Length: 144
Image (tube, rainbow, N blue to C red):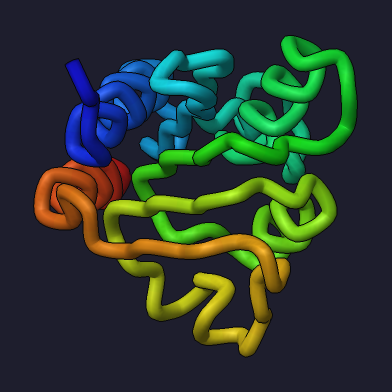
């Protein structure tokens, strides 16, 4: 059975829900190679007191450890929110094949800042965008 982008984005959304329950900004990510999830992560910036502990950064590190190397060639990163400039920079250096994200981040997303992905990386945005956006809105309404 061929699993699709929505299937894997739902897995990333599950990670985002975990972050939400931990009172972290609800962003989740998974890394997939050959239809297999090799890394799961969510934001840990509050818990680790680390501004770099975004879901994507955690997922990149976990996937690289799983693969035994620094490059994520052949991998797809699914993340519930458009990557920021830091995360897209790390994804650039990882040479990941694809980045698939849910909600657009018009304030802090890499596109708004003019960052360009690695030439060999394809990007698809808006996958389960509504579900990802609703979770973010719930989180920030709860904090206000």
